[in-house]
Length: 393
Image 1 (cartoon, rainbow, N blue to C red):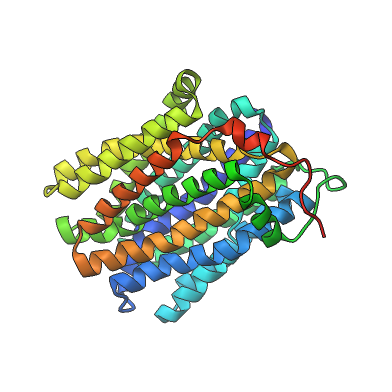
Image 2 (cartoon, rainbow, N blue to C red):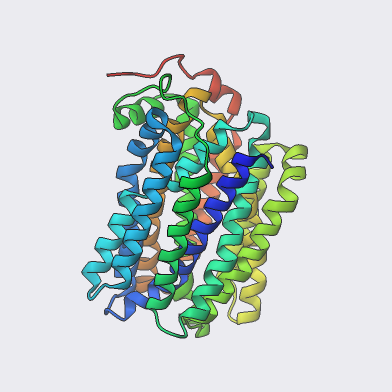
């Protein structure tokens, strides 16, 4: 692993530990303010709506001014949001905290653009797999810490997440080298650039695939705690430990198996295999009525996500030229944010209205749509239709 990849790995890992602390805890914390399942879904959604607004602008700024300052800004914004969340006295304050985090939350899309800067196209699935390990390890340690600290209070894990994310910002400031040469990075209106990118058929296809993929994942992720609580009686610590176990398997897949599998099958085929495993896991989880069977059902789901996350990122990065990675990742971040905004609202509302089976069944159906869209997608066609210049103002 090169030094820049090692540093971005450590930065993302520390950041994801903080993020992993919050995700299993947030539904239980929100319920202390009287939040319904729909309100909890909206609490997840406003973060992603804010990211939808901010991601194209942050991607454009990272092309123009560099990845490093944008990444540091986004991490500091997350710290501020965690402090606001820990000191919240009402559900409204929780919503404001999530919006602040979303508006500054370009850390993941900027990190992906950074990885694309420092790797060759043929090596990106492996590099994104390494970043996937950071995700996996973050979602091992983070939920486990959240589970342990929630035994003290619901705010104790949030303060820990703030401190950990501040550490990630300091690491990025102290050690992360820049990759974008500011005198040659292009500029432009971010939402105009997003519209321009969506006019390219190959890139539009991969961005639509990106939307459906993350919509499905958001339904699973944001209904997980309530699903497990309603069907199996899990509390916040148990949910955190289960998330941690899920992260262990995902980290193993992305750290050990993704490179040889992609080398043998290619990005697209590996991604499609991941979709099949994910759909199988979602349906199996829906049909599970004992905690043991539910845990078993999470195995193919973890395999599917382990295959899907790095190859989805690789497919997006390979659909654009080297000089527009910030824009492409910003556009992908916007589509991901849209999926993450609509997914929690649908998932939690359908759980409240139709019962705990509906979120996972609908997520499996969307994975099926993603698989159909992927069948005829070609990375080569996407790159060949890319114009040599990007609109400027």
